[in-house]
Structure formats: structure tokens, C-alpha cells
Image 1 (cartoon, rainbow, N blue to C red):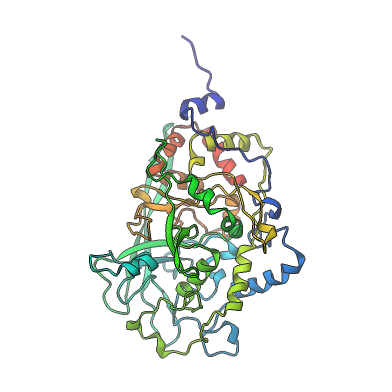
Image 2: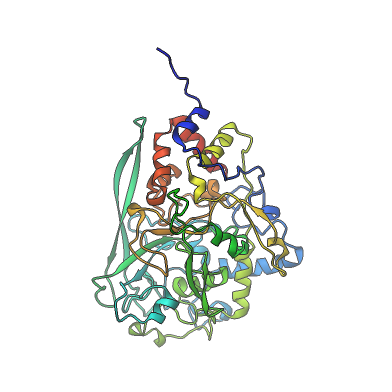
Amino acid sequence: MKFLLFTPALALCLFATPSLGADYPVQDTPNSGGAGTVTQSDHNAYSLPLGNLPISRRLDFSVGNSFFRNPWVIAPSSTDARDGLGPLFNTNSCQGCHIKDGRGHPPAPGETAVSLFLRLSVPAGPDTDPQLLQQHGFVPAPVYGSQLQTAAIPGMKPEARLNIEWQLFEETLADGSKVELRRPQYRIDGPNYGALPEDLLISPRVAPPMIGLGLLETIPEEAILAAADPDDLDGDGISGRANQVWDRIGQRTALGRFGLKAAEVSVMQQSMAAFAGDMGLSSNIVPDTDCTAAQECDRFADGGTPEVSDKIAAFVNFYAMSLAVPARRDMDNPAVQSGAKLFNEIGCAACHTPRHTTGTLADRPELSDQVIWPYTDLLLHDMGEGLADGRAEFLADGNEWRTPPLWGLGLTQQINPRAGFLHDGRARTLEEAILWHGGEAQATTERYRTLPAELRQSLLTFLNSL
């Protein structure tokens, strides 16, 4: 009898199809964020300005950081540059959700949800205003609007309490290894503004990391669209789609690339939408908060019209656009090198596209013409029923999510030890996150499940080096 010696190289042949990984590069530089990459890798690693940001712009970064980090207060206040909070809100600062500019986390039992919230809507019907769908992307829930707000200023009641129950179950891998997963069950308790709609749709969202956003915005639109394959014409099982959403500034439909369903066109609009939804603060870009007429928020003082001035908005946008990406670590580790190749070979790179080149911005040379390694295609993908929220947003359907960037991934729980992975933070480890991937990623997940333990670990070691 002849015995077959099992090696990592043989594993790649056994578990990958010949075409997988052929067109995807292996990162050969620690500079994931191009020339602006920073080498710090401690708990402040996500909060640094681009390494190539001119000294003359560092003050702008610091001012933007102050408005991002410091709490906003109830109006009227002597702190008139940062007043107008609420009356309904989820948190009182950007940093309250994006903890140290990183990921948020689900609440512990009995804890008020802060860095995880629920988007709300109801199904569109035959009488739904087409302009509402064109400009909003969905139909807000009657009375409760687009987002469940679990906090309020004195004299106002929060919309409701959000509670999560976890269902634990085990997945068994091909070699008999068992991995415990947890499935969240969301419950809205104590609604204070009448009964919730019977047909209410919810979508849980945990705050994503802030690093590298300016670089992602600078990737040319044509490069993103060129990677889309909505009808899977190449037959690889991957059918990335571009979301087309409302550009509030341009007053037109445009490519979405930010947010968990790619529903915002730019960092500026994503930021101003967060000010409105998360903190109840108006701006010229998003003048209406999520407080509906039935909730009578106009009974309370506001912080001006708008509450977030154009000047403050510009500082916050500059800050968010200028957060640097941490450098790769341990690239000489053989396990990291093996895992990097395996990442491509089993199909992860089909959606988590390793490399991009940014375009040119005349006023932002530090973001221009950079070779970057974000590991995303910024497109929508069907992730299967296990991760589905059942809620459409512009062109994104209830099974689709935008591919999240993976750069800085290995520092996630150093930045916020309570952080989880995936859109709602349900995955406590990277292995859990992989095993939740379904839909277009199901074949890749099955390849991972059949890998021997040594190779699974090498893939995880690679991901932790990002």
C-alpha cells in the first residue's frame, strides 16, 4: 500500500480549484495604506493621522478629532459649538460608537446598546412614493423612523430598549474539530411611542473601524465597477454588485461605497448621516434627524440651524478621511506567508480583493496615487440566509452586504477588547466569522472547513497579521 504524504502545497491542490487565486496578488509590503501607513500597533493604532499628512494639515486633523471624540451636549449650552444633542439619540459622541476609532460591540446582558443599533423600515408597497425610495433607499417605519434610538434627553422618552438573546450551537469541521457559534435574537422592549408596526424590518449594525476611509474614497469608480459581475458571467459563483444610492450633495444617483450595505457615496455623507441618526444633530447635508413629527421633538431647543455647521462638518470629514492604516506585522513568519497564499487559493480574495490603486485628488496629494491593500472590492455580495437581515437598502437586498475591508483586522480586539466581527459583532473570533459566511462565500467556507488544523491556523495567523 502506498501512503500519500500530506503537505501544505498538496492541500492547496486538494481544496482549491485551479483558477482560484491565480489573479490575486500576495501582499509584499507592510505598507497596507501606501505611503501614509503607520507602524504603531498598540491600542491607539487606529487613531493616528496619515504618516504622509503634511505638517500644515495636522492642526486640521486635531480639530476634527476634537469634534469626533468629545461629547455633544443638550441645547442651549455655553458650549454652543457642540450643543443640540437629541432629543432622541444613541450616543453623545462619534467615539462612543467607533471606540478608539475602531469597532463597536454588542451590549452585555442588561447593558444599554450604544455601539450597536437597529435600522428600521417597513416593506415598500404599490403606493410607496418612488422618490422616497430613490432618495432614501427604503421606507422608514411609521413614528419610529429609520433607526431605533435608545437614549433621550431629559423630558423625552427613548424610543425603546434593545435586548439581545444569544442562541449557542456547534459546527463540526471535517477533522472533527468543533467550533461554538452564537446567533443573536433581537427584541425591542417597551416602545414609548405606540405599537411597533407588525411588518417592521430590522437590521442590526455595529460601528465599523474608521481607518483608511479617505483611501477607499479615492479608489476610482471605474475600478470598482469593473470588478462587478452581477450576473456571474464568468461562472465563478461570485456576483458582486454595485449599490447605486442617492448623492445628497450632487442630487443624483451615484455609486455607494460606505456603510455596511454601501448606502453612502462619501465619507462626508456617511458622517453627516451618523450625526443625524446617532446623535440627533442636523447639518446642511442631512438637515432632518430621525425624530418624526409624531414624536414632537420640536418642543425642545435646538443647537442652531444647522447644529453641525459646515465648518465643523469639514473638520470632521478631514479627520475621518485622514486616519491612517497600521502596517502589516510578522510578514516573515512562514505561517503568515502560507496563510496569505491560502487566502487567495481557497477563494477569499474573490471578494476581499487584496490590492487597489487610488486615483488623484488635487487637494489631497497624500491620498493620491497610492498602492493600497484593503482586502475589499466595495461591492455587495449575497452572504446567505445565516447573515441575512431581510431588509433592502437601495439596490442591496436582504441577503447582501458590502465586503468589509480587512486591513488592521489583527488589531481589532487590541483596540476594543469587546469587539466582535461581522455586521452585528456576533462572531467572537475570526474563525467564527469565517464559518458564518454563506451564499456566494459558501464554497470558500466549505474549503476552509475541510482544511487540516495546521492550514486553518495558518490562514488565521495571516488574518491576524493584517
